[in-house]
Image 1 (tube, rainbow, N blue to C red):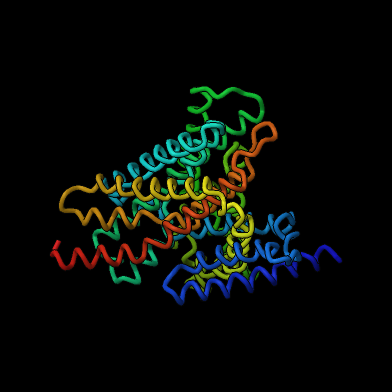
Image 2 (image 1 turned 90 degrees about the horizontal axis):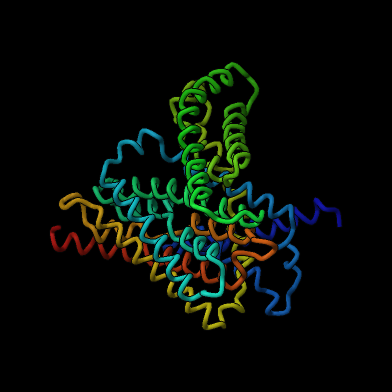
Length: 410
């Protein structure tokens, strides 16, 4: 079969599965992304029922490449939903919640991995801690909106902290992947190398934000002079991909650059395009995301081996990681000043890992030290269970918490 025919057939199957599974998830009050993940799990395990036709999709390099581009688009979209100004205005409460919401889960995740996986390397222990750091901004925002609480004090603190969480989580991910890469190259881990990678990650984010604030208005002013259709979309994607390449060039994950690109771009930078009748960049990106992002989630689900769930050790690890993920985010509520909001609701709102946790887990599948993978199939399956459970419990738990607050008059 022609290579293009193979890819388009795989895309047809993946997209149909993604949309059907996403629809089923939304009908039962869950995020569509969760349905896409579960749909991928079912699709990837059809071989257990004797159907092996979809197995080549798991390792098809073209599908994997499209999925990786989908991740860049996803992080770009997440960044577009926030601005540097909003991050600076969230206040001390969100910053304190965010810092505690990264430190506590990272430490608990590291501790759980070291306790239950003592035979694995310290690199795995660090990576498991990193997967527990971030919070899914999209899922939390959707739940708060559905509950009619998007303008509450709790919502403002949670959403501000979730954005900062993503930034801090990406920095930690950059440090961990940098340490793993150094170990794979035969360089021993040292505090100096950790510090250098940390400074590199922070320096890139700060540099990208500062440079982007000055460069992006000029870039889009030049683009505005061009009359070719689709100019705004082309320059927006070019900016995203350029910063993704720059992040990779200095040894960071490309998703760091994609997120920074979205964070830098603001409506005011391309308002002239909107004034002459074009759609905003967020609306132009959405169809591309609707195509590529589900490919990533379905493919991540396909990499989950249901046979691993029959292993009590995998289920035990998944349960321990889930508890660590929930307790770690509850600890962040200690950063909320008294009288600034309901601490329990804020802690619950920070629980879902969603798409961000899956992105971190997928990167673990590609990391290795001297030919040995950092994250194997069993550990990956345990992380997926943690992501699914934290995403499932948040909507009903938040609904209960806000109802409790209303009854108590808090």
